[in-house]
Image (tube, rainbow, N blue to C red):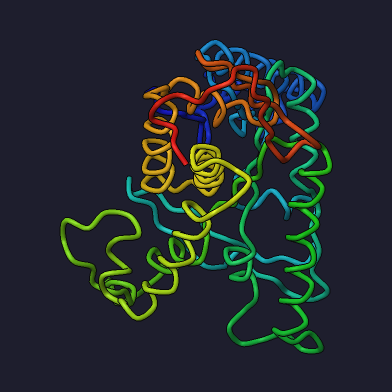
Length: 317
């Protein structure tokens, strides 16, 4: 079964754009010339990503000043001496520091999404910076007349709007950079590990946590048994197919492949149908060898039509 992939993260800027950035900083080219170089890099990057065959592409963040600080463009209530974030390859990014309230976004991610969609022939995903990362803008010493609580309210409202606008602009999905766990690990001054639950070895996916907390696992397993294998108008294969799709949208490797394997077994070993439905649930249809047709309905729900009198032998229930 093919492994679905999609690009994550920035794409290195081409030499021409890097040269244009240096020339602009030295005031050797105009803003119009610089934006033309950005547009050329954006168009070329998206063309090359499409050529890979990826079902979803990105803009490679060619025109963002930074994946972390794009919302701060144009703001005048910032100072330069904020928190420094280290990266594994040794380089660092330093955030600015808020000097007064209120806080709002100067630029939102939908600006970059709309620019990318002009060149796209496939669905475009959009990356946004997490509220947890931008929360570091607020100084530890506080700000007169603007409490941390007020700042966080403004920040969460702005971050939610950033995500919502991307979805309204038909982003294939929204990727949030620097969630709390990853950021905490980078900023922990002790260099120690984040608090965690030790899991038994050899227990992949959800099996590890359920082994640690059997009292919680029992009702959860009972619920899964009813949903996936109890009496229902949907066949067991259909339910496993739905679970496979939902798990893929949740980006759970273990669950999607576990449900996918069971669905394929119940469909007579038809792994291709399982994978096709997972990849094309919203945008197309897939047919299996015995005549079941999965198609989109109202954009989010799948249905099937039986065109033969019998199910495959392994598709019981």
